[in-house]
Image 1 (cartoon, chains in turn red, purple):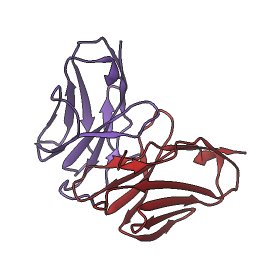
Image 2: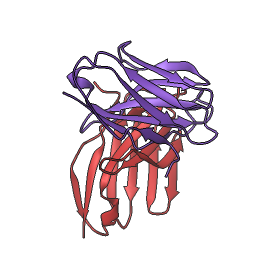
Image 3: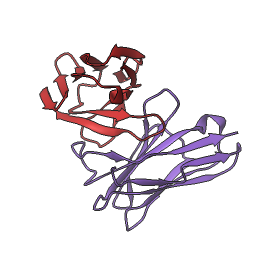
Length: 110
Length: 115
C-alpha cells in the first residue's frame, strides 16, 4: 500500500466549475502538506502549503487538511483552461523528504 | 520561475553507461533534494544534501550518488544505467534542510532516456 493515495483521473470539467482534488495518506507523522501543479514537461510548481489541520485560501485556491481522517483536499473555484495540468499532493513529517501522490490530471474545457 | 536550473534538458544514454545531471539551486538555498519521476507517476525521493553532506536517502541503490558543492550547486550521478532509469529527474532547493517546514522549489527537470 502506498503512503499517499491520489486518484490519477483524468478529470474533465467545464470552464467555471469548482474542482475538488483529494489525497489520502497512512502515515500519521505527516505534518506539512503541499499541493504542486505540474504542466506537461515542466517541473512542479508550489501552489499551496499547509501545516497541520485546517484551511488555507489563496485566490481561487483553497487547501484543506483533516489529520483525523488523514485526508487533504484542494479546491479550485472558477476553473480556467489555464488550470489544465497535473496536480500533485505532497507531504512530509520533519525530514524534508517529500512523499508525493501519483498526481491527478485535470482538463478544463472552454 | 523558481530560480532553480537544471542541465541538460534532455539526455539519451544506453544501458550500462554512466550519467551526470546538474542542478543550480535558488540563490541563498543551502539544501538540495533530488527526485525521480517516472511517466504518469509522482516524484520519488532519491536523496537530499545539506551543506555538502547527504541528509537522507530514499529507496534507491548505491549506483545513484550525489554531490553538493560549496556554492550549493549539485550533481546526481547514476552508474550502470538500466532501462527503468528512464524518467524525469528533478532537483529541488530549499533553505535549511533539517525540517519539513522548508518549502522546496523545483527545477524544470532533466529527461533521461535509456535505450
